[in-house]
Image 1: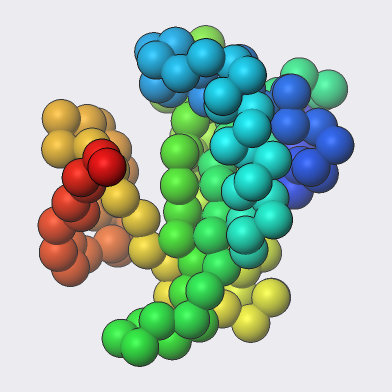
Image 2: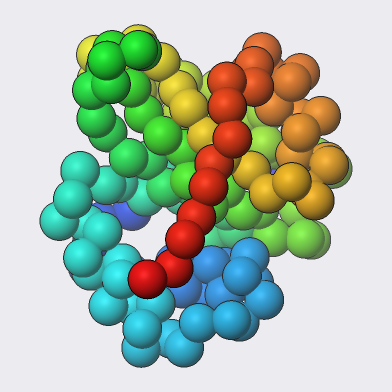
Length: 141
């Protein structure tokens, strides 16, 4: 059964929310999460989707910007593949699609953050050729 990768349009925000809720363990109310995504779509953000038939089984945010140290870069955000589909090399295929998509848009670097406790993702990203550049800090105001 073929898998399809494509950009999810802003009108389909509601299709993204269930997977993002799983990623965040339902820590944010749906109404707040939806409002945040509406705002994100207005800020150089795109959401890539991984589909099996018509079912959305994976998502990944893409933030486009130019940085002084890396040039035109894409920050990959909230990568999530539904548990039922893990272990099938779909993450590798998803990132190959992301590399091609962003390179064709003229971007030259990809950055990402991952939670310190997510050891499986660390191994994946190292295998993809990512290097640790620094630490990500957060302070809620």
